[in-house]
Image (cartoon, rainbow, N blue to C red; front, side):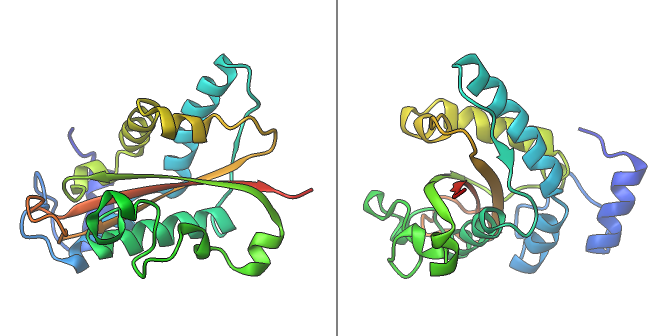
Length: 203
């Protein structure tokens, strides 16, 4: 993928240098945070919601909506993605038993405050870890990110079931976190963690 002049200018303004073909190898956490800031969450979530709603419609399910910037779901998705990326794995201590747990070993649902829980009904979470940190090129291709996440989750029966929850007013939000280190040392270029939060607001 080639960067347009506008995209290059946006990257230079954020990072201060001209983008190369990749910044994964040897990238620092600070650099990755700058790459993360390039992701347009509104666009990423709009692309993801379009894909999800098409799949839900095919199964006779009602449409979901993007929870929006500053919402409980988006704040939770971003916080969860970042805390697990910083942890070095989407799972607590990198183990299967640690799935959907936070870095302190608590359940993922504790990301929500008691006040937030009081205004919610059902909640769900999908998680995905990529074996390397996003490149600058990938970070500005929200459609590609959305398609990758959607495809991975739809190809897993348990993750698909979460996204196909038969509720009429679901709100969803995707968050992305990057880190230059991973618990599993085979991931030498760091990790990208994606989190999907689904929330049913109470009437």
